[in-house]
Image: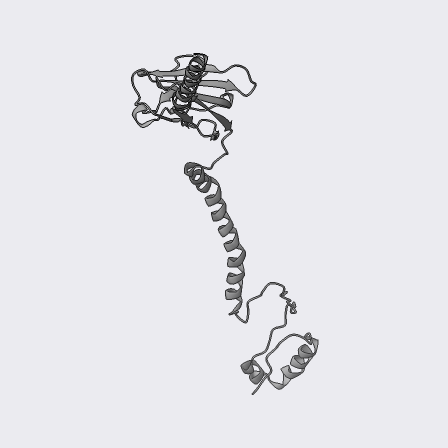
Length: 252
């Protein structure tokens, strides 16, 4: 009799262990939630907080999604978004008016978007999904978001204004000055290519020699008409004339 009772007890223990291993392990691995480990964004960007899940049961109206936020300074997670048959975005607080539902439960998607990211949004975001009876396994996952200042960029309008009001006038003035440097030199070369015999150029001095008030150059005709009485006077005047004065000698 004792052997019979001991045998039944052993059978019950084995049966319980079998049932626990089959149903217990299946429930533990029933649902799995996945999110990227890290996300990087610039200030003012729209950030998609991706969250996907796999479940052995088809998503129903009882499925729910919860998004929580833990600041970089630490502390308990703060629930700011919930989905249960429909989305319940935050209306006030840090994320008020900046959360949009992007998920699709039928495709295993529970993602949301964070609009106009700020430096205060840096921290850890937790996606928690339950789909009864699949409520075990790894129903939540974490994403660390890092928001930084946006690098300065040059817009096309800024470049156009810079070219129009600064570079273009500067270029025209430079070309004008270069032209002024070469144009006078060319003009002087052209003017020096032909000079009149009586033209006085720069650097030359016009030297005049005053003649005697009563002395003038004698022409051939006047020399021819000189009589013997005037020859002596002519020779006397000739000796008094400056040696460097040009005069016309008689060729008669």
